[in-house]
Image (cartoon, rainbow, N blue to C red; front, side, top):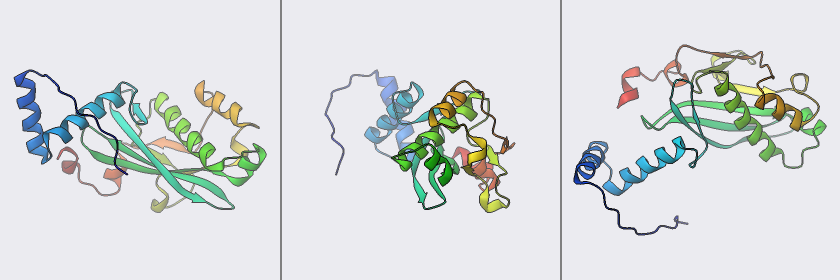
Length: 197
C-alpha cells in the first residue's frame, strides 16, 4: 500500500531550487525525490525521523532493523547502520538476547524486547564515544561473526528495567565490544573510494 501524500506549494529562492536540481540531476533522481531525501535527513538529524544516532564526531547514522532469528536459543534482530550523507550502508549487526534471559525477565513479547534492547545498546555505545559503523564484538570467533552479539544471562541484571537503567546511566560494561579503525563495510571489502560516490 502506498504512503499517503499531500500536495503543497513550496516557495523557495531560485538559487536553492537550482542547487537542489543540480544535486538531483547528479544523483539521477527527480527533484521531488531529492527534496524528500533532504527533508528526511534533516528530520533524522533533529530527532523527528526514523531511528538515528549522531556520533561524537558529528556523523549522522540511520538505523534500520528487522527480525533475524527467533528460536529456542535466542531472539535476534538485524540492525543496518546507514550513513545518509553518502547514502551508504556502513555496517550490519546481529544483536540478540539469549533465551534464559527472556525467560528470567518473564518477557511476553520477545521480539519487541529484543529489538528495544538492541537499539538501547547501540545508543549506549554511541554515548561512550564509539562510532556506530566501527563496532566489533569478539564474543564469537571468526570473520563471519564480525558484528554478532548475543547477550547471555551472566552479563545482565535480574530485570529488563535494571539493564535499561544501567545502559542509560552508562554503568553497564560490555567486555566483548571494541572499536576498529575502519568501518565494517571497509573491513568487508568496500573500497574507500566508493564511499563518496
